[in-house]
Amino acid sequence: MAELTCKNLSMSFNNPQTGAVVEALKDINFTLKQGELLSVLGPSGCGKTTLLNMIAGFLKPTGGQLDLGGKLIDSPGPERGMVFQQGALFEWLSVADNVNFGLRMQNHDVKSTKAEVDKWLNIVGLNGFAETPTYQLSGGMQQRVALARCLVNNPDLILMDEPLGALDALTREKMQSLILELWKETGKTIIIITHSVEEALLLGERLFVMAPRPGRIHREYDLPFAEQGLSKSLRDIKQQTDFSTIREEILSMIWDMEEEIMGNV
Image (cartoon, rainbow, N blue to C red; front, side, top):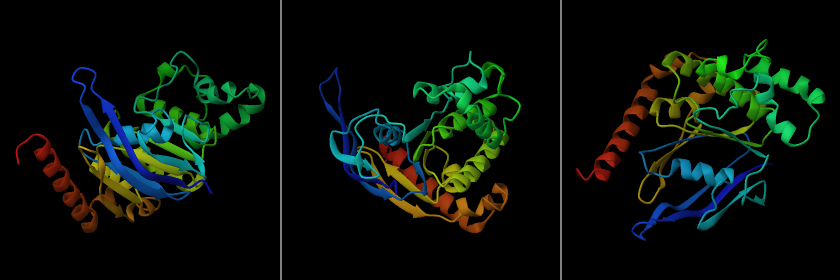
């Protein structure tokens, strides 16, 4: 079981101009079981992306440790896949070559992996676009390519940093539904960072609200909406009384944090 364990995790940075030490994160503790879907939310500067980058292995913590499946995370690895806000695609390559990139870097034979690439393109709704230059696709379609590129490598843990932030409202809702479908169909563990309270509620069966300076888990929620989104319209879920109540509670919580950061309290 590829369980993610975060023990007393801390991260500090030195300001090169002033020499001051900035605590980005302090004493973060949680365990994420295989197949769980976690959304992380909080005001700017609370360390959401820093946390994700440490789990990805891009940053080494200054305190505590991270383990995935009992193995210490101290560098990037194929068992962790990353989906960025802008997709980070090679726009001059075809859709298929983008999706197949990770497998080629692992020296897999292109011909032998074609069926796997085609399978994931079909799953994310890009059947027939394999040979299309990536730059010709819309933003939503490019994010589908990014998802397929991540999933074709069969990671245990999928990390998403504001993956839908640049999309229009309609495309964003469609992609939210796709993420829920992929979560249920693949059984993958997913962590998604977002600035949208509604999105965090819709896409997290667990939700962390983080507080800043230093970044820490301020409140945790166990939510039913991700499971409901597999069979209900996301718009209908947003109209539910319990959804609205939690949304307003979290909005007020984050608003108070922002006020404190700005020194207005």
